Length: 150
Image: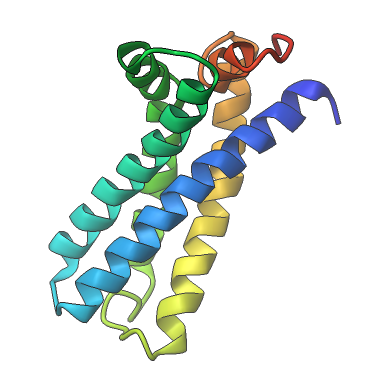
């Protein structure tokens, strides 16, 4: 496996972490509160973007970027990746019979959520590779952390 694919996998794992935090928290809260499908998806997607951006923001701030530059870096690094991941993840949840109606105590809730995030990861890796190969996305963040350009 070449370095570009390794970097894409790492970038996608980073994206998956933020998305998973937001997705799980959003779906758990929306299910607990008895919200409908649209509200559940909107909350989960909003939180996925928030936590995805937050993870990058914190990392580049630690690398020395000012707040404004860190916000721009997070938006540039993560927007396409999170967007693809959220479309795939939520699309699968909406298509999975019974997934959106499952309660927190129902294994279907957790299986569907985990499986949809796993598929979203697989679909998003090539997107991140494409970005990295063009010096965009997480390639920018890696340069800020002192890694070689991939």
